[in-house]
Amino acid sequence: MKCLVVDPSPTARRTLVRVLRDAGFEAVITADSPAETRRVLESDDGRAVNLILAEWDLPGETGVDLARGLHREGERTVPPLFLLTSRNTRDEVTRAVEAGVSGYVLKPIDPEVLVARIEAVVGPLRAETGEDAAETSADDDGAEAPVDAAGEPPAEPVEAAGIPAGETAGGTSGDVAGDEAPDEDETETRQAA
Image (cartoon, rainbow, N blue to C red; front, side):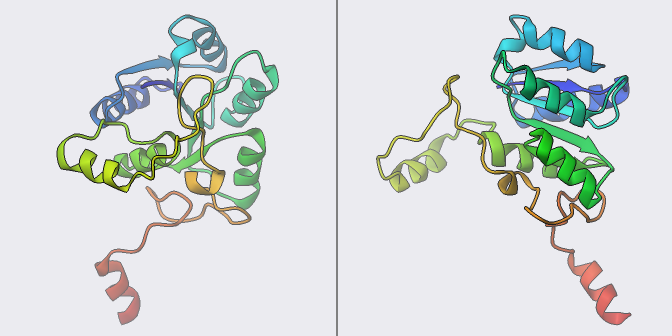
């Protein structure tokens, strides 16, 4: 799998490259602007991109504008695009969904949450081996799974990507769409108050 990371911050790009490689991405390409993103996607390397992670605040336009523009251009199949941001109001989430984003991950980024959200849309990042593969095969009903033109499974509905339909993406830092359960310490603190 190949991912394109779009962020104006060199530090953020380096961090995301490390997280994505550790998670199982074979290749991670980076861009620092929407213009560079379009150049990369038009290149031979970019045509094989399976996922785009983009910061909301980009130079010259927003990640929402980038998503909308890529979908409107229609010359290529747009891979799933996730926005990385601290913005989480109902209006902002709605704008992102309407622009065609596949996921929305709140900052600061929790690597486990990020990987879980990506896998909800593109499938497992690491090939299953051993007993895990045997269990999966045993559960298979023999039906062929649908794939897109690139041979990849189609993106799941936005709700599966962490943006609940008709709800805000509120929550604490690291949460996506506020669906993370509070840990036991938080629950005890709330009950004691």
